[in-house]
Image (cartoon, rainbow, N blue to C red):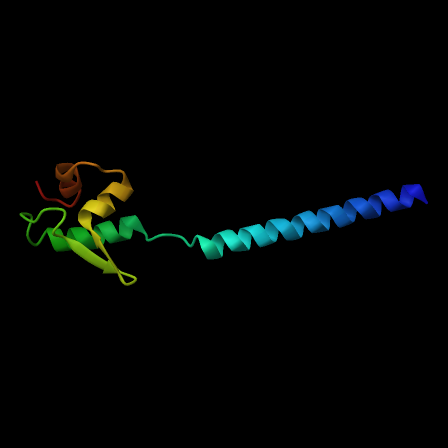
Amino acid sequence: MKGISLPVNVVVALIVAGICLLVITILLVIVNPPGPDWEALYRIACSDLVINCDKTWDEVKIEYQDKIYTLHEICLNRGVNDEATCKQGCGCY
């Protein structure tokens, strides 16, 4: 009898662990949804910037999902900390 109950306990423990992992994964996706696609926002902001390269990176603004992002914020999220480098990536020298 003891030999049969051990595998049942292991199976139950594995099922409970699987359910816990599934619940944690679902909660992480719901509570922390993925952020914006910074590369796509950068391309859109660049298309606005190349019309007038004299704009600063704080003057170029893109609306996405009811939030407004500046080119400054977009570049920082892409890992570019310098305005000149950010604007050069758009073709403004």
